[in-house]
Length: 145
Image (cartoon, rainbow, N blue to C red; front, side, top):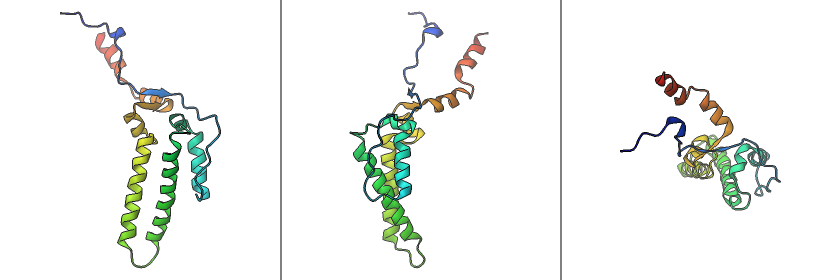
């Protein structure tokens, strides 16, 4: 029977990779044609945010473009659904499908904290916040006394 490993020698292998929190320093890719001014600002904000470190401007660009085109379509459908008068259930269902697809693409690209953790990634700011909540190491140290 082997001796238990010294606690100082233990390594957690399931920790997420930590990104430093700095944004992309290269040029922002051109947004898809026809986006509203608000979505173009969101596009630029995404590509200059710390999350941009997760995105490859070549291989991820088609998926990010599709995401923003779907967000544009969702906004248009949402305006149609909110118009006074009879509600077209077909428009409502189309809006729901678009919203679902947007959430799926966002999850696949790691654009939410939960999806980044599922991909094994975390932003440094998120780790600092988690570390301040009284991690297990301190409790473990107290138990050794």
